[in-house]
Amino acid sequence: MSNSWNTRVELASDLETLRDITRDAFGRQYEVDFLDAHRAAPKAWIPGLMFVATGPDDRPVAYALLTRCHVGDVPILSLGPVAVLPAYQRQGAGGAAVRAALAAARERTEPAVVVLGHDTYYPRFGFRQATEFGIHHPHHDGPHLMALALGKAPVPTGVLTYPVEM
Image 1 (spheres, helix red, strand yellow):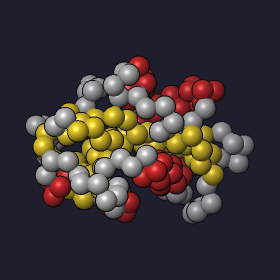
Image 2 (tube, one colour):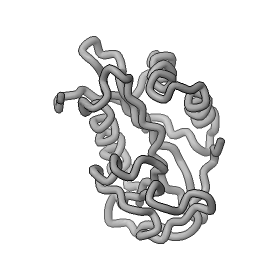
Image 3 (cartoon, helix red, strand yellow):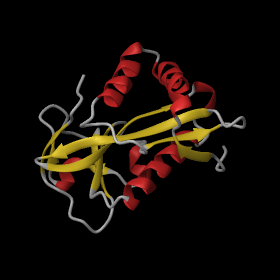
């Protein structure tokens, strides 16, 4: 297991590689379309908040994307998708990209990040069930909806909405 992944903000030239990573990691075009929908939505897309972990040739092998969502009227961040090429899974590349993205979010003084994801993967980064923070989603309450406080700002409470839902 490697713990020395290089991470960086995505480059414009990475886009096709990121689509390939998404397709290979999830095996469906749906996730590629979901990624593209976030990129096309000005209320969701935040330039500089997609981080990649790179392989030996500096090509991305994994990424973590942070986009905008809201709890009530308060803007917060949403993590997802996180994707890793199958040949690099379980080697720490995805975790490195997530940690880089969360560090950037903390620097921006964002109050919180939510993720709809695997409830045995994300707790390693400090995520807890979103309902513990008072964040709810009409269709996704439960262990797979998680949240992470990013600093001293209060975590907003209320109903979670995404600008892009597919």
